[in-house]
Image (cartoon, rainbow, N blue to C red; front, side):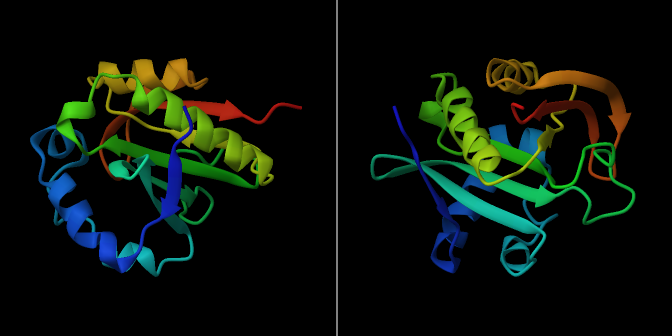
Length: 161
């Protein structure tokens, strides 16, 4: 199953706002107004994506330059590397395996574009996310650590040689 992973546009901001208000997203991402999605659209260090299954949007990916902020928990990754944050926004699609599959698909795309490594930092208590990331090829590296954003475990994946 292939997912359409398309850039977020201003027209998507109401959808992202709705998703950020979902209890299952707020639990791990915090209050919806902590990050301004419209501001992130214009930040060259960040790329934001809507994940779709056929015509139905189901989730969100953002990837970012881990070397664009100093210090950063993923400073140890080689240049060029990206950090990645994801969630499934639609409650009826949680737990169906979509996350693992679209993460694998997106990671393969990043590696095909020359990215050497990707870091992801789920909350230590978010066992479902940690499992999905592990199934998508990420390896546990350290943690829990306090990042500028939250408590996290650091997981990463390197491009094949």
